[in-house]
Each structure stands twice: as C-alpha cells, then as structure tokens.
Image (cartoon, rainbow, N blue to C red; front, side):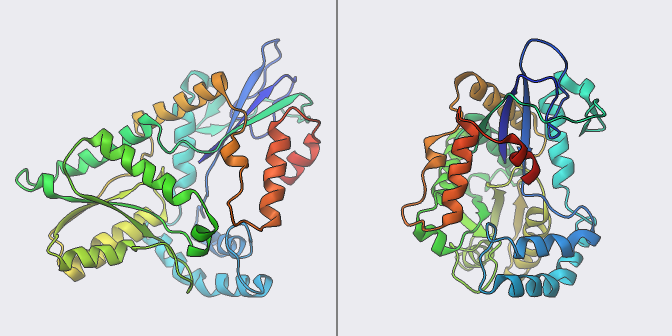
Length: 346
C-alpha cells in the first residue's frame, strides 16, 4: 500500500481526497491510499485480467498487445470460479474503506458508509498543492507487532505440548528471477519484515520465508509455498502456520490460494495434521495505529520522497522506470508542475 500525501492551500479539495476542503486559512491534508485492487464481482473479472495482462508495468510479455488479451480471455472462466468460491468478488475495496474510516475516525463526519464523500458539487483543479509520498514501511514496529499478534492468535489453537515446534511459514507474492537479478529490493524488504516480526514475537518457533502466486513459465523466486508444505511433510513436519507477510488485507491470494488450495487441498494430500493461516492485518487496531503513526511521522519529519525510491536498480534499463522516477521527483519536489496533466492522467 502506498499513501500519497498532499498539502493543500486552495479553496477546493482534489477529487481523490478522503475529506473535502473547507474554506479556511489552515492548509488541509489529503491522504490517498493505493492498493492493487481486484474485481468486486465476477462480471468484472475479464476486464480486470485484460488490464493486468496488457499493462507492461504489471507484466511484460512478447507481442503483449496480442498475447495479453489472449491469456486474459483464456483464464477468465477459471478465475471467475475462484472468485465465486470466496464470495463472488474481491474484498480489497471494502477492507481499504474500513482502514480509511478507522484511521481517520476524527474526520468521520466526511465519510458515509465507509466511503469518502465530497460535499462540493463542483470541481476545480487546486493550484497550490504540495505532494509527498510514503512508499515503504517494511520494518515499522507496529507492522511487526500486528503480524506477531496475528500469529499468536493461531498458535493458541495448537496443543501446548507442540506449540513451540509449530513451523511458521511466512509467505509472500513471488517475483520473476529476472527482476531479482536486476536488483529489485522487494525480496530483502520482505525478509526484513519477517525478521522484525520474529523479534516482536520473541518465541522459539522455527520459521522460513516462502513464495507464492507464480504466473507463467519463466523461473520465479523460490521456494514456492505449496512445494515447501509438501517438502516439510516429507521431513515429518505436520504442524504449521502460513503467514501472508506481504499482504495487508484479505483477497484472492489469501482466501483462495492459501486457504483453499494450500491449507485444504495440499495439506490433505500430504497428510498435514494441523495447518492454520494467520489473518492479514485488515482492520486490526494495531495496524490502524501503524498507518496513523506512519502518516503523522511523515507529515512532521518527511522526507517528501525518499532517495531509496528515486534510486533505480543497478541493472535497470527500462525507460519507463526512468520516466516514472523523473515524474515523482518532479511531483514531490518544489518545482513547477502541470497539475492538470496529473489529474487527467490519474
């Protein structure tokens, strides 16, 4: 999740604001929370897959304009079935609305049914906006604490005699090896969250970091989560917890891939005695507190944009990546910027 922070000195609030701007001298702050998203209904699955498979910032395919739509069309019915099995759609939007409304409860008069509501009928592009960005917070103490609390909830379900021996498998979305070789920081940032969580947990349980959700024939970061469950079963490990360490709310990769495909199908296949899946942070009070503290500290101490974010991978040759860095450097810097183009392209 990424939050873009906008300090406003105008009479009107940007349309994506979580609360409208009221006339007054004091600058207002708008917080835009971004998530990957997902289809809210099965009817939206086809378009959702088409947009992913044709977006080169999401996935890069040969002859993408032809192959992308073909893959999306071919997978639509299968993916529709999976969404139907978890309730008919992705809950990401609902969880995000809940996180917003709980995080900014003092401003709840601006929110109806958990949805941001703009009280102004007309819209005008504000002229004096300052942007800043929170793009990573992998080792924040409250993030580690909420994952530790989620693990403890599931450890309580195991017999006390074997509780300290329960294997904790931290599972995160995998990444193509070509991205890892390019120098992407994602794997070590996920590992840093795992280390912080185990420190907060302060228990002797063994743990490993594994990877899920591989797509396509190319090699991705391993070991894969399902393969790890099978291999540990062969080693005699029959009690384990899956922890979705890189996800902040439930969605198809927790509710279907982890809960149904792994905790039910794979676990039964290899004779696991007990396997539990820790809940994502969702609307846990500790997680809501983490979001609020991160934003508060950012507004007080900055930076508007980090040098880490602006630094490209050592083997990056993507012109799109360079233009993206240049865009955000300009957006978050005190330089002249055509806001109309930002709003139009967003």
